[in-house]
Length: 462
Image (tube, rainbow, N blue to C red):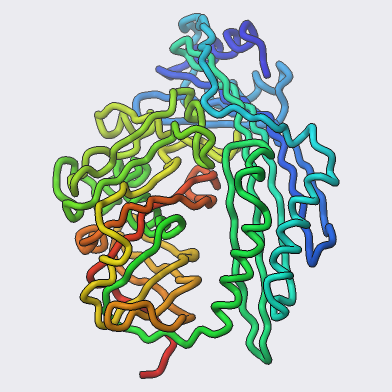
């Protein structure tokens, strides 16, 4: 990382322009991936990502340039590019930086770089063996282990100099089951902002068993019927529905440009009164947590919806200018190659007071979406479509037979208003979220919830 005096020189040079704000973002990252197939290590990759990004603001105009060389000639070339784009001046203020110190919220006990490769491969082997031992119909297991250390340093023309070290680990297990011509899969992908101590708490064997269990359930699944019906969406990764269908529409990236269904709705009821939701980047060692956002501001807990009322958006600094509002420390980016913008961290619906059994009461025919898959959403309209990786029909208030080929189709505004019961079993699931500033780690989550009516897409002929 660059020294304080060098950064002061560069930022002062940036401000010899029409800009009213300048920022330098530095990154040095190590990513390690180990993959295994049927108990044999297939691949080991370690890559280093290193570079610098320079950004200038002039009112609502933003100019950004980046490069992977940090010698003086290369950095000054980038500065010249952004100054030319925004307008140069002969004079400007001299920037004096003050380093901000703080206590790390996300300590790491077992550094992955200090652990021999054989021990890390054993994490995969334990998951593989547990999946293969679950049933003779499990014929293939693919697994991977991702370890990341990201060091960032952010300085700007207000005099702020701050850094962060972000360590994450994630295990991915996919099991494949075969019975005759029927071939199905199941998966489990836990992760955290921790070192390898994570696997002392979250046993690799449990992930292997869970992936195998889902694959075996899907072997016996029938084609799902389609139509409007009540749907119970389970906890953990079930929260991807809120993340995609509602969360993206609460990011200033879309709100500031009036391209969100929730633009202009602050203080209004947008959900059933039983719904409260937060985005919290401060949770210790959570997958989506950081000490600071990617503009150098301390992460915080943001209450987005309280008792059905929209109380906050997620706002980065540039969009705060556009919206004439305070920022919410919500700026994130994949790497120095991306200009940051407002993004989610750990986003989830808060617990209610219903029991799991009460969710099923009164449902003659419906769908229990136990595990959600991927999907898509249009923030401007709120329309979404999500796959259900593991689902069951509900008949006469009881879980009935497993189904396959199910999808949930609807609108983010509607689904929030149609949630009528929320359980008290909050869990989160890990994922990677793609948007304008690249792919970033995010937690999604919720308790089990009941949606009174939603369109279920299916494959059954009725």
